[in-house]
Image (cartoon, rainbow, N blue to C red; front, top):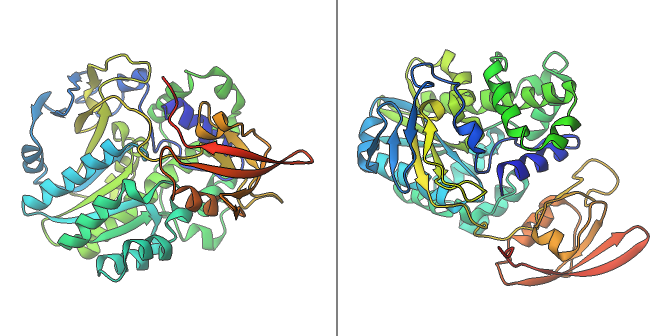
Length: 412
């Protein structure tokens, strides 16, 4: 999924139930070269090399073990990801592995779970669950819409080597409340789930967000000033909550030389403007960031350099392709409204669009199973691989239709 297609999906959802703004996707090249972030590095470009790690402080290529050595004085590390790109998760696992091999006490913070779900992760840490049992008991597909398999190897490595995992996110409904009504109007219960102080959005952040929008003028025009400000509040609340909860988990559970490795959407890490900026006032240790990036953009053009302030380390990945695991590529009404399985968005050239699904369709059943929620739909789809096919019953207007849903990749 491209950055703009992702942003389009999330902005449609924002009017219904706000979803994470910048957690996936290959960044537009203009954003990669913006002169923002750390002033010491924002005037410099560094090379992006396939399967290479660039230390943006020096511009030199280093190996994974050397990267671990250069992180020896880092206590809080943010590693960006695109949720549906396995290459990003392979990098995350390699970072964790190299730090563990270097003798660090590694703690792992997870964006995909609100901190209220920590009991499930503690059970996983303690080896109490099978994989299937954990996915079910932790409500994986309720809290995270992406396939378990993308993260499986990370979870298994952590459990095998005794690396404790921590939920660091905020309950989604709390961030939705912040977006809709601002901080001053939160209930006491809602306010209890976020840090007492959140650093306001900066002009650099606005410039970065707007740079993403510029590639799609129709989208940008659809957002009025209030909607944009609500979006900024939601983003900074997520940044602040994840940074704060990661820091508390590190202080409460880590030893003197521990490192908290936070697996988090790249948009919460870029240019140090997200979670790092929010947590920096409360932490006197060193914070670092690693962001993997494809060396080819969505138009097939090479990305040869990146602004040095983009992250402390960048890791070159191959050209982004179709996700390893299939999805429908649709968004539903959710818990709001009388028809929670009504489609409010169908992504361009997605499995759903190619099968004939339209905005406004109401999903009734999938593979013979009634569909009552988006969570249930994600669980049903999680059993399918590329090449499979399923029947889907929908209601369109006053008519009930049955569509064939072939899970096939889009032709070039």
